[in-house]
Image 1 (cartoon, rainbow, N blue to C red):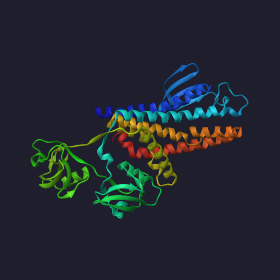
Image 2 (cartoon, rainbow, N blue to C red; image 1 turned 30 degrees about the vertical axis):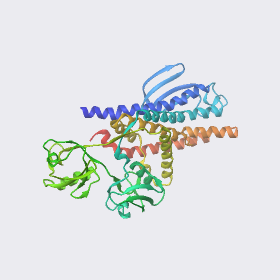
Image 3 (tube, rainbow, N blue to C red; image 1 turned 30 degrees about the horizontal axis):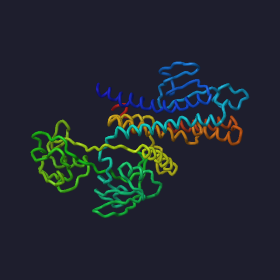
Amino acid sequence: MEGLIGKIFFNGFIPLFALGVVVFVHELGHFLVARGCGIRVLKFSIGFGPKIYSWKRGETEYCISWLFFGGFVKFVGDELEGQSQEVPEGGFYAVSPGRRILTCLAGPAMNLLFGFLIYCVIFVIGKPTVVDEKSNMIGSILEKSPSQDAGLQLGDRILEVDGKAVSSWKDIINATALSYHESVLLKILRDGQEIKIAVSPRMDQEKGLRLIGISAAESILVGEVQKQGSGEKAGLQKGDMIIGFRGEPVYQWDVLMKKLEENRDQETSLEVERSSRHVTLHVKPLWNSGQKKFMIGFTRDFKFEEEHPNPFLAMAHDIASIFETLRALFARTVSPKGLAGPLGIVMMIGAFAKVGFSYLLALMALISVNLGIFNLLPIPVLDGGHVLFNGIEMIFRRALPKKAMVLIQNVFVAAFIFLALFVTYHDLMRWGSDFFGK
């Protein structure tokens, strides 16, 4: 029962609330500026589809609808009626193109402002970050992967990708996946020497990204040590950092678990770092009936550091990432399969909320900035498309023919529906079992 309640809370309530706030901010921008520009508003809706709840104040109906992945503000006379002879008083086309442009820009602008304000809050309250997120060391290399073919080795530290410095594993993945070059040039640090290695990423058909087959090194920090367990008997202590097993470096938790399984019921050596000293212990992995695996009697711990990211730099990073992704999509180095649709966004919000409040805030800021920038693109049916149409009217002193505008919008509506179905299908392939339960 607790598992079901948790799923509903993290995969239902929190994502709907977070998305509802971001959409509300967007539509509020349109609503406030429209009213300020003398445009009458018939409906203000958070979400699409059937109404959950609605009320009316003046001539405006306020609605909360079931499909939270969007929303809209319905203006008087906004259905391309500017071509007719009779334009309703206070209608969308009754005001100047400049005022219409301001109204269209207000939604994205509010999203960008909201994202910035969230980053300001995170700067003040701080964001606890696992130290391993800053790792630039290679912890595993897939067999027959581009990295193995290029000669990368475990323990290599990646300093640059295509001449751009990287400060975290996320930076490394993004730089390699979004690169539009056939190969990426990595500057790595190995045994105190800096060397450059070219690696040719391969498209991962399931993830829709070009990858090079590596994952980050992890800190294996000892937490609580089980009383009378094999680890305690061998001298393992809380705070020890496990760095080796049987004389070989160990860079990841899963690798350590595999080695314990392979050496079950055998006494073997374990290398740890303790107070800047290397200590060798002799342990015997024993079966843990609760975990259903061979272990040596300790829990894993993590190192955290408090981050206070600069709001301006965070915004700049998000905006740059959006345009890099768009460029990669047009260059076909990223597949649309890699995009997150509604289900993917819901699952990510739930996952971030489980980690902590500041992580949830950071994702809401990212979604808000993405929504703002995406809506500014000069694509019909988006705010940027309306800005484009009204800009043409301002320049040429006449609007585009009504039939042409309707045709263009219908074509792009169909394209967006197809894209939504496409990414939703791949969301179901990736996240379906986690969302609906197995």
